[in-house]
Image (cartoon, rainbow, N blue to C red; front, side):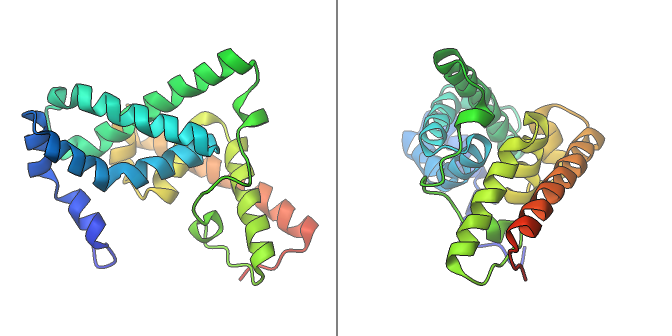
Length: 206
């Protein structure tokens, strides 16, 4: 908790906002959206690798939240519930994309010119030069997209979104051991992929 930002604290203590939103208070719901929007976008972008898809997923997530928030029985489970909706919206958006384009997610999604957070920092890589830093960030995003969907979701939720295994298990409706296994193999794949890229391109990482 010592490293939590004011936004983190607000998100973790939003019980009253959730209850008000459940009672139909649109102001409270809009406040919830403002608290969680960036985080949902970040998850969606890392899942899909596309700014446009991430925007669609995020928008659809909050539309679904508005429609279903009255069904949430346990306010304390809001975070897991929210991510479950985001995951479902991600799946639906990618299915829609595949139906219209006829190509796979891994073939089409990642565009290096999209706006996104500094992925290199997230995985604790610190290249010296700005250009090299961006190249590595691009490679990390591509490596993420190369994971199986099951592994990619768990890696994003744990390594980027800092969810607990209990929360991941609740969101995905799997056991904690299954979540841990998917994280282990997902990170193993990422490390192998990135080590090869770093070696081949003679990148320097601190």
